[in-house]
Image (tube, rainbow, N blue to C red; front, side, top):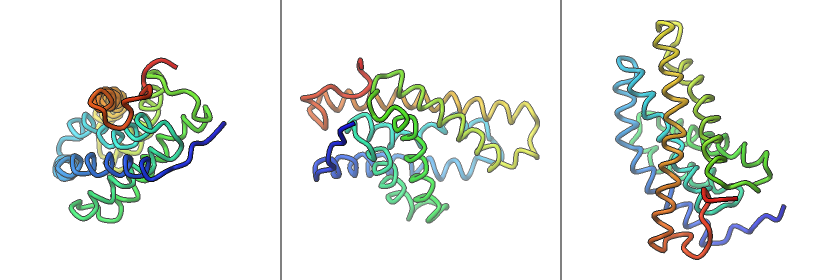
Length: 187
């Protein structure tokens, strides 16, 4: 596998994705903190939003580390305004890292839409399980736990697909990947 160098353009593109998505996540972080205990199913429905920075970074740059970098920058942007503080940065770094695992397994050779959907489903199931733990699953009914986990698992591929659509729209506008095939197409 040949690994492309992370040049200034790649770093700045990942940083721009991270800043934009980090700003988008700020109100959803506040909303999720406020609603998690009372409405875990509603929060589960938007859980896939936190995968967007890493998925967009990977789709646009098609190189190892792009997801981790974009997601970490998103965490850095959201950290000062989040009730999670430093945990926001750590959480977003981990989102990026775990999202990159399926790409690592394929040695960053597969970039098609199915790969992004499989990756999204993987991270959705993983984070759905963690969501149950963080919500205090022992205090929930079995139906609420199953619903929260299922919604988190399904919402992540939905937001994964929306991430691909966003990257394709940016590429059509000449941002990031106008002259090359953007991930999510064939291959």
